[in-house]
Length: 398
Image 1: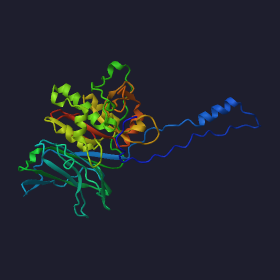
Image 2 (image 1 turned 180 degrees about the vertical axis):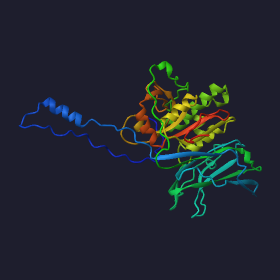
Image 3 (image 1 turned 120 degrees about the vertical axis):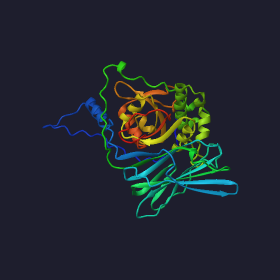
Image 4 (image 1 turned 45 degrees about the vertical axis):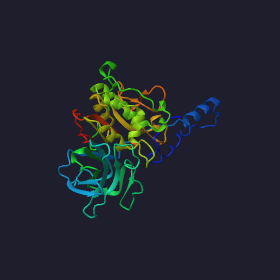
């Protein structure tokens, strides 16, 4: 059985009408041969695939390099110290209807964080929605998403805030609780990916196929790991993909502490409220909790951005529809795979953890685009914090 992440926010697909040929023109009756009838029936039922539609959304990533500009308030109750940090108004540059937070922390293992976000509209009071409680300890009461958050203005879908109408700006609020007074410096990085409707502002052309494979960068040497190698691994595509990337950086940076195993990663990102290991911010928060590492979620606009990143030696974890990745014309469960490069035709080379064999595979570019767009081109970016990333013309990373 193929491993899958529990279904996340998928739009139902509609079956395509069969291709119908026009009637043959003739002036007198004639009898079609059985062979001709058979060929006609076969042709009529061949499914057709249109080119992947242009994304109907735009995304922007914004981060706070520090919390110095945040309003700070300290509380002390029953031997617990709490620090509440509230950001100034942030304009991501688009009218947004969806937001995903990313955070990286460096704190005592038992420090507890709560991350909240409010749309900032001049016509409505601030209303904060809880986008996750985070703690490095494997304690189901301290690291979990918060359910049952929905009103006429917004709802929380596990780790995504979805608005009923667009907002131009937002504010973040972070609460830190510990037995000792929390330090704002425990937050290494804090960012938000905002998505709104509209056409992409840039069009990146598909590169021309290279004349020889010798001119194409080889795929990145990311370890190949199958989630099906583990007894509980059927829904571990996200921690398995993350483990592959962390081990890649372990080798490149000569850092044994990054050489993780899949069960450890799965335990460290498990969301007991959602009941799985595919909570996006929990995965990047775990990766970014290691010294000298940074990880965040963003949404891209074009496959060419994946080419830019892999050419810079950065493997990219991508969220796709597994059915569409396999060429089926219907949505299905979400799945995480690692993009490790491209071939001479511009097709996508992946490490797919959902197979027992042949974890490394090549997927036609258009098929990958259809599968990827079901998540609005969501990715995890994991890299050393000291690494200079290539320029993002779309403001999808900093």
